[in-house]
Image 1 (cartoon, rainbow, N blue to C red):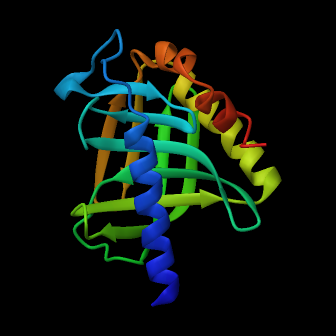
Image 2 (tube, rainbow, N blue to C red):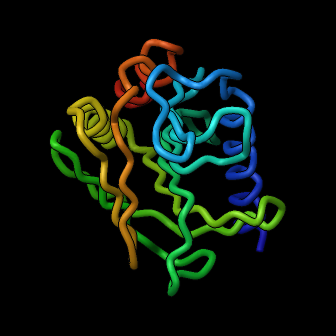
Amino acid sequence: MRKQLSRAILAAALTAALLALTPARPGPAAAAEGRVWIGTAVGLLYGTPDSDDLLLGVACFEEGDGPVLAVALAHEPVFLADGEAATLEMHSAGGALALPGEGMRLLLDDLFLIEARVVEPEARRETGAALAALLTAGGTLSVLVEDGEVALPLDGLAAALEEAPGPAAVFAGCG
């Protein structure tokens, strides 16, 4: 129970921090449904500015023994329960990346996240480089999870990469 509570608190804090850093203006290339790529001090978001609509978050933050590179997708597969293992499979013209993660329900926000955390330094560097290749290739980023696929247009990402230092830190593996 304690692990589950601390995990939920960390996830809620990460989500709140990312949302608090969302700029008040949309980027130059607004995506479908008003979602855009947003560069923050700790990472990169895909969501709707000035709202709690966050579809994908990639961030670096300190936890316990050191830095963590986290990727979180707001998606609730039909057969995935809180605490169960899931894999985030990401594909674009820049390659493919599979990250083992875990489903997590945030009751306060009525939100279900699938979150992958990378803590080992070499794995963070490799994951950061793979994310850079995936996200800067252009086209569409496809994220497959259990029972579905989420497609995120990569249009407007270049501007978000210049908005704040977070994306560069993620691409460097939070080092």
